[in-house]
Image (cartoon, rainbow, N blue to C red; front, side, top):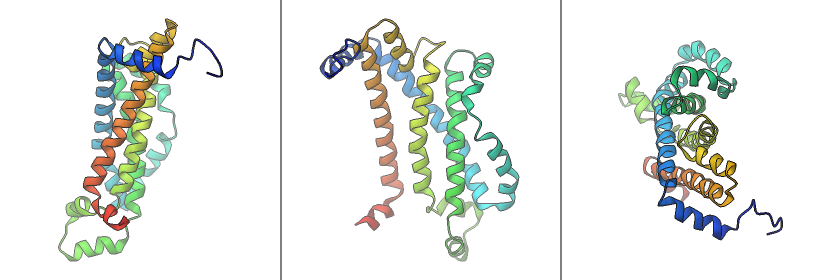
Length: 224
């Protein structure tokens, strides 16, 4: 209202465009983006979680892998996008690989550091009950809240990377939809895409909160 610019539609017109476009092609772009983010995050979690646990619990393995992580983690992975597109093409594989490549390190580093904070008394108590190495990995829950926190942060990163990856060399996804609407000078449609990308992030955050509520019930009991 202050800027009084046609490039900034009113909230009412933006939400009206969202409702109208959901019955057209916006729903398809939302589904594509959701698929890419969820698959990338799951792959990152499946790969990074066990490696992070092993690095945290096994100092010898950590001494071997930590320098590799320290060298590769700070490198902005987005610079490899031209090579990723060259080898994997312009479809889903390149987008999923790029998001996985970035999110993997966030989950790995957070999991490793969270496990290293678990006290030796906690491990010793489980061993005294007859727990083996696999059971220590499985049943020591003290690092789980930090892992889920890293998952929340990774969701935000994944959506940001998704927008960048979908903003060129593609014809599907919310990133493409937003940039296409911007190029056509259709601000209400552009904001419809922005709204759906925001709602996608909110939905994923709520999903992680529900998972935490189920897996970390002791935290809620402690809060009471």
